[in-house]
Image (cartoon, rainbow, N blue to C red):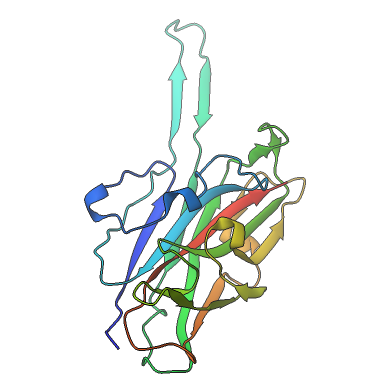
Length: 228
């Protein structure tokens, strides 16, 4: 079986991309970041782990800014302070690696969310009410079917994900597995990584027990989203 190498692609609000180094993803399967999807969720950040020999790049998020404006009249010191939208997520893939490839349930290790901060929660109820649920979900994209996909033979080795919740990561957001949730208290206006307990730590496995020889690839998407 050919070797499979893995690279990390981080996609966040405000990031620029270079199409020449973007992995093959089915963009129609990826919800638009910051917009309400048909299921009512709003994706705020996405980290995509592309398992293949394709070349990808790491894009850095835009940090939040705080600006001040002072009136020109020296007798009236009016100060307008604007706290800009701050959405940051960091995924650590150091514990994720290609296992010895054989016909077994293969453990690829863990994807860990090491940093998260979102101060922009008013996206529910028509777009002006605070969302009450924060969640992480995982699914695949960039192939014709779910799992680690064999383009030559037209089937995929199923991918299972374990967090505080577990399930099979299907193709596209509609077939994602929700691995962790947190209910936003009424007195909170931000979501941080420390709000999730245990810390976001997701095990990725793929069942190759019935897989034939050849090359397999997919893009594993880890999304932080809000919901009503």
